[in-house]
Length: 432
Image 1 (cartoon, rainbow, N blue to C red):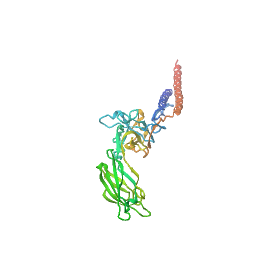
Image 2: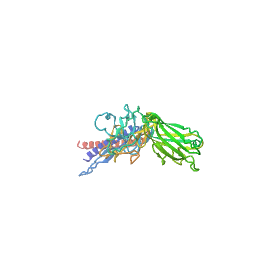
Image 3: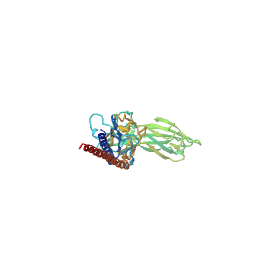
Image 4: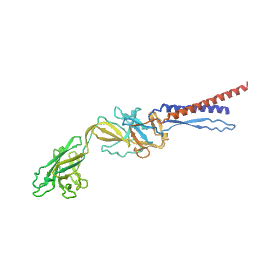
């Protein structure tokens, strides 16, 4: 029985070392595979308590994929090459499942991927994995989505032929008016400027702003009537205001007060006038009382100093960028950048318990624990790195060393089997 158990132990030794060699060969073969997680074979002894003598129990092997070990991060030249600097994973689905008319999309996870738009604009890897994310509302806000469900995630789709603009909602005006024009005997001729803005449909419109001095019979009034007309409203007046300027030594030339003749209110705390143009409300900032910015009245010079505004004309999409928090930005040739998706990071209590699938992808199992969707940069998941790929976690030098050790162990077990065979042969020869 003891000799027989020795034979069985030797065979078990061959089997476990063959298993270990299989993991080593897999690791070495994938040493250049992005996102590959090394496999590891661990041995444990088997103990058999015999009634007489010692019985060899042998050994058995268990294999583990070390998913929680990350490889080095390598920089690339593509904005949608993604890696995760942390334990989180990117949510993806199978490209072949997107065209299904019913049923939930299968949810997979990867730690890195070279995502490129396919013929339908979906960001897809070379292994057929499509990036998933939460859609961002048109106003740039992210609705409240459940963090324990994949149902709200959608495939990230980029429409390269898309056009977009951004209407103007804010404008700031900095103009110096000539103080001499509000003195008795002045001509009273108005001066004007035109400021372009962008409408809701991306059209170029303008606010025409005229300043008419109030000329007194004697002395100086230091007052101007500002009239604002809107080209999109057919030239209609959208606001008229009386500007009075300070003459004191400390604040001379700055706004003293603004009186509303018609149109939206003036807020002295912010220096903003609430105008209503054809496309909707617009804030016109002319400066706060007592401040040297915005409107001033100095010397005899009419000088528009600066006009600034938000909004952009219509442009076509030229590409996408993904920031460290997973926000997917569509970039347009007009300079507009618009947030369209947010990619969360998936975390599970036991990453090594995930089911390993083809293409360096993984699936949640009972052994991995329940998942949670984190915003990248928050919690334990780390952040998303664009222009980057995660390399294989294989250490080739270590694998080659283990291969030598495994080869020697295999040879030793083969020697045990050979020795047992010789001993059994000697036992057979006794009865001759």
